[in-house]
Length: 186
Ligand code: GAR
Image (cartoon, rainbow, N blue to C red):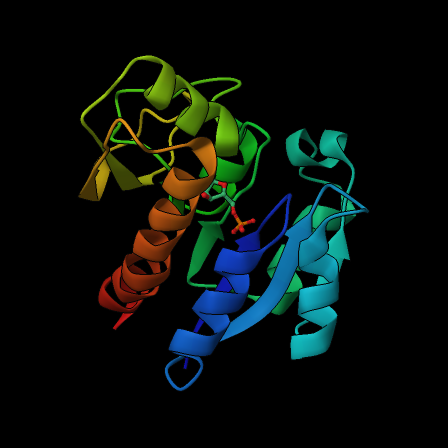
């Protein structure tokens, strides 16, 4: 079975959805978070997936417990699912460029530092965009700039709010993120 690890900083609904939709084909060997209060921790415990909390500075220290844990548990792909810290060169090289991210907009629009979750939807609504969507892309050392794997669109109407947009974007993510992971690994 192919293995993935997931990095998440928040609620972790994508992480749980990936587990549910890929469990017959892919093993999640660990969920990593930098946020000791992240909702994803409860989810991982409930799903019996090992969870690892690390400090931000471990990301740039290849002698840290974060890196030794990654080596020990093994993975074919690192999946960022709502992970908010910048991925440094150290991790990109360590993983041989095998890191993907999901972003809740049509990159290159609304990417970069500070652009995550509801901040993105807020900006889309503020700018009266007529469409938005999701981007699944490879991770390089610039925020949200790695090669795009695929994008999916939705129509944004004048009636949309951050909440309605967030719900529809999450639906797209739940449908296409697991499919993309399976496609990349099998
Ligand atoms: C998702 O919408 C994901 O696209 C976004 O965070 C949300 C996490 O939701 N990621 C980013 O904004 C990355 N820049 P979840 O915790 O419920 O899976």
